[in-house]
Image 1 (spheres, rainbow, N blue to C red):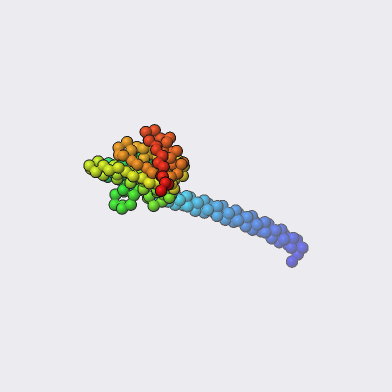
Image 2: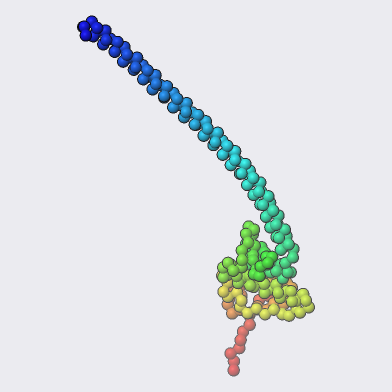
Length: 225
């Protein structure tokens, strides 16, 4: 090949190479653009899918809230109806025992009751919380027992069998605060029944001496033969 022809051929090949390079760049650019468009389309589809799922979840949540509202309202109405029934249909002895119990616990517990369908005593606190008498502390349980005993005494008396009530040192296991409140409750009982309370403990004697309406006497046992 003549030198002139070789130079011309080289120039043509150079131009061809440049053209192929431009085509390659164009293809790469087009590929990148198409990839981006594809991702955007996929994103739009995903957004539509997520939006649809969101609407479905909102509908399900709305249905659940409506059902919860209806069920909750029904439960509240049922509880209120049951509480009214329990409050108005308790035996009178439990109503009287509740007064004694409230006095002894300084108002912390306001009611003793038998829930519907339950065979054990429950108590209601001042804040409205209810619990089984099984979960009371030993001291509070003794207050409950004493309250019930005094209420039964009143119930028996009101049926025409009013006998003097004899209590023998029943406060010896009470702490000073509980014993003081129990003394006031016993004084209330003595306003309706004759109550004789015996003790050999000076501090118990002092408790009753501080309660208005209570007569305290000291008995001496003779040791003479």
